[in-house]
Length: 440
Image (cartoon, rainbow, N blue to C red; front, side, top):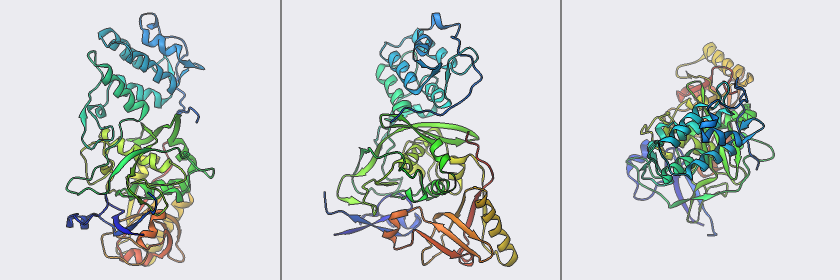
């Protein structure tokens, strides 16, 4: 059995030809194992103050008439909205059809209009009324091609790509290396049939970070799964046929993307320590972590900050490299405040630990980010951990490393308890959510 080294914190595998710039990308190398062998429909709920009565423009608008025909129980479901758009895309686009589509989009969730979930309304709008993310199409390629918003002159191909982007999750994020980084092992998208959640539901231990520097987000996902697994279930819901809606909180409001169950996978005999061949977040039992991560990569294309190293707004996994407490806000809608441990001691340190203990007891996410100082033991430099317990009286803090099963490769414990004094010496920082979630 052979071994190679891979950087689990900031981007891709370290190859022999990789430049020394990798030293700037946090964490130490961890070993990847080389293997010896080569639904039901759902949608976010909403209670808009609308009437189920048909719009007064129905008689002159074939698209609105089609929406009403596809209602289920007085609501336009995901499946119904998809059928309406596919019906329209089968026609030749012209000024009348585009005007009808535009009017139909504006008819959703208004008084006398057609009811739909917030998710369906947003993605219908994204197809018809436009979104900044429509400028480009990746489809799994590392080089984007122009797409553009729907218009009266759109081709059927463009219309169908827009439907694929927002309803089918077919605009797959690129998996190439970040700027100024070399590539790594060959990967390709593979469709997975794992369940969204195991029978136990979302758990902290489902989080296994792969070859991407998004510990800041995966630590938040692990913490949320620990403290409020029901929230995770609200954020990612099956649309059926291996397609899922993913909800993030952006500027105090829900922002949705659609993903499918295709994930970047090593094409050779490389495997993660949990036995998975998924390149980034990985699992052999469920998909929720991987789909949240993929959805976040797609969210970046809308101009939402999803990492602090790169801000090109492109549909690429590397957009997630590095971050602080933003993951908590993206998942819960709560503000996330930083509390530096540098220089803390005595009563002030005890008070801060008590504050973190109280936050955890209230169900508020708490994470810990280490500095770039050299560390030993189970602590990892420039890394984010989920905080699972704080004992102010003993001065001890229990952490979960989002590397998960892949911690084995770095010879560090997945979960461990450490003295707060060691965290003070490291100049680490607590990141704590500010209060109740805004997710409804």
